[in-house]
Image 1 (cartoon, one colour):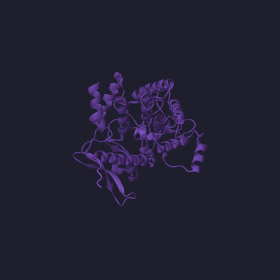
Image 2: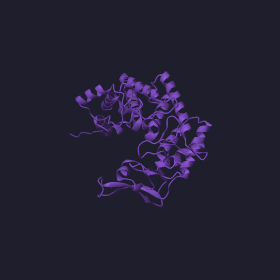
Image 3: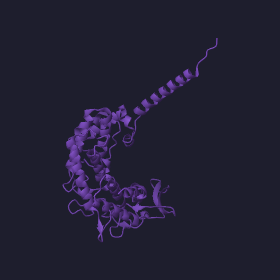
Image 4: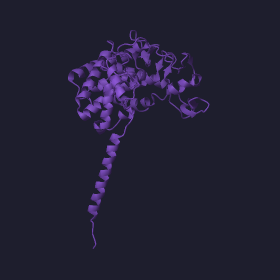
Length: 366
């Protein structure tokens, strides 16, 4: 006996199989362990997953009672019972909490996403505790130190290095402007965030380096008292920063109603980037089996290369500075030790997108 199966029924069966497989893939994706870096850039729906909450629980364990976190920790790494016990014991320790290398403001962004997705009040409480930490850490002049409580030494400087202060200000500005996923924050905290952002803007304008009566850019860190460019580690000398200054300008470009002094600051910094860009060069990685790590980072000639800028640049001339652990300024990347060449960015296209896309769009608007 013949059996006739309609095309419509076949299509329905195929659709059901497709949906079933898709569901299996979604479950696998949610249960699959991911890195801390990737956990921060997932689609919104992922933050309600078991995996996301497991990582968020790790974030809570690493948070100190003062609201801050230490740096360079893999928050996504599964923890043993002994590690959990030790972390709980260390939560009362105030030493080492920082905004360096993405610490604290990165964890807070993550907790906000998980709270929005789950509604679990424990994540909200930890988030608000962290915001209080950032607000308390701010100097009266508007800057932020690298570590809080204050750690003596260069850690006391107003720190733009590695996106520290700008990372904090981006977070607080989003809170103040009631952007997602921060709309759960109470009005009092939003008002405090706005005041902190306003103070931060004032110190950004006050620390922009002036050379021969002309505004240029910023150092990676500035003295907390006289605002002058300051030294940090042996290879981080007082200078004009290509990387950190580009990040500061990008922050300023996002201000909704910039005052005239902000516009002047932006245009002066862009002028400096234009005047000091390096063309005809590019940075590449090469294999070199004679070296312990087997590779090296070098600058080579390329007629289509650039624009590039130094991470550190002489304040008066704008020329790139290459400084190794001996603290001695060299003129070329290959003159410093290989360990520094491969583990620290001394020259790159830091402001390329700024000059090519973001600033022209801002200028057209303003």
